[in-house]
Image (tube, rainbow, N blue to C red):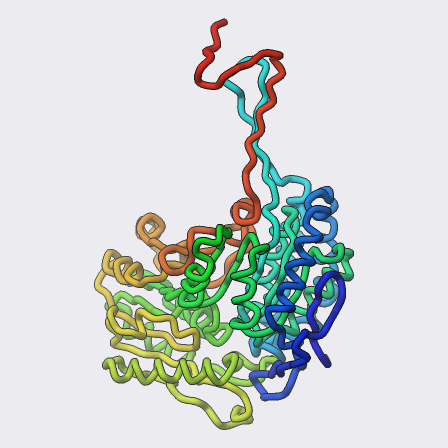
Length: 496
């Protein structure tokens, strides 16, 4: 791709530092692109461009803002395969999943574009005669969108689309592991006719770019997706700065399999949820909570399927599991495998760095299963973010739900059962933001709220426009008194 530059005020420009860094293919170690290594000076220029564009953009008719998003969606649709292949080279996920990532961006563009003709407010009757009242949404200002590497198209669109259709301007900082896919999205916005300065793009590390965005006085909203530890630091760094903060963070998601479940269907969902995207999803299943009456046959089926998974370059259509994102993350995964063994869990398969069949050049890790895991073990409590699944045995549904809810995270859960009563009890008692019945823990659709409880977030939701807009707008209550006299609410009583 050559060099990826910053996009500030409608111009592609190098970093003020003059420095670059390499964007590497995690399957091969080859360079995908060189990327601008930006500084706080670049952030300041981008924020100033966004602030300058805000007044005009917020007055831009909302239906016309929506039309730009429709154009973005169409361009994404036309270039889906090209972008998916770039994403696989840059991030490592298999091509089938990369296509799905781009499709989510397409879906988000077309879905949010329609909000340009809605942005619904509220009207209510007044307690006074000859008085009209309503509440409308106002844009907030400049948004800092800070996104992770595991969904380099989908997650940025969750943030950019609602923010822009509501009339905000944006400074977009992608993860340093996946700037090329993000740059393609920005080019598409540019081609679709987005006015200069409305969307700005700055690449670089967290300490240089991310922190500068958190502290910049002209940033009104910070929308962050990443680890719970980093999210907590975002809150600490912005405390007292009067910014709106939206956090989407970690997960320790569980699939519960009851004794009446369809085990073959459950295995399909478990494999997909645990090892899809090489376990690098915030919704990935890292715990399997199984009724002990069916634990043996389920584990046998699961072990056989896991052992057959093929690792390799995601561009190869026969690959089941691609690499993890980088060597640092692979070391972290392997450390957790060693922790699990030390804690007394039984390693069934995996737990190693494969070297054969051309895998030594990339950051591959073998899909890993642990049995005899207890709820208090670190591998059952801490987010690993890799292809590691811990199996926990329970005696009934109540215990399964207790174990499911017993982590500091609360993103996604799943239950496999053919008993409708059990399914509804799980719907009532599971305390995660997402629950699947007879499906795995991954596969959210864009028009329902996405987010979680406890350490997974701070109460906001992405995805569904009707929840995302609560982050990117402020409510304004408006009263119109056409009585021609002073009417004091709660003081002057209406007497017919």
